[in-house]
Length: 149
Image (tube, rainbow, N blue to C red; front, side, top):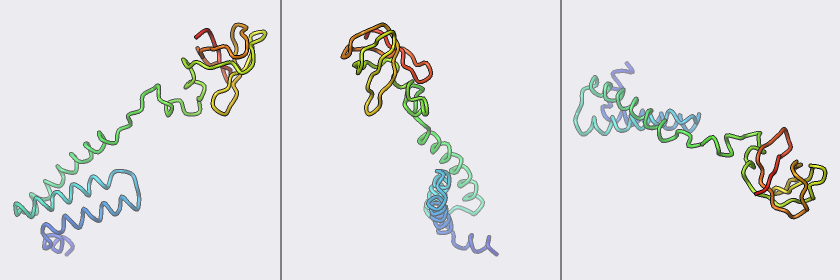
């Protein structure tokens, strides 16, 4: 009964199915149903233009669905590199390696502090006066190891 009703709608059935799938994507976002919905709409448009049989429409929808999902994965794939800040989530110190900062307090007996935005970091390195430029070379726990820039 449902199959006959869907077949009776012809190309409109595919377009309606596509809109329902896109609506499902809005209700449960996951960037998956949108591609199936777009494949269904394209199937409906091609069915209307070429007057396809229901079997040909179903095969076309299956092929377009696979192609749309693969295209969607390619388009939405993360472009994050290992050096990006998202890669160092919960490891903020790692994002500071290689950057140059000004000493907030002098480094005495191998310890001092630098200001990074709104926070102050403990640094270790050779003794230097406050205001000297230093480069972060590595992170040891919550301490930054600095050297000449």
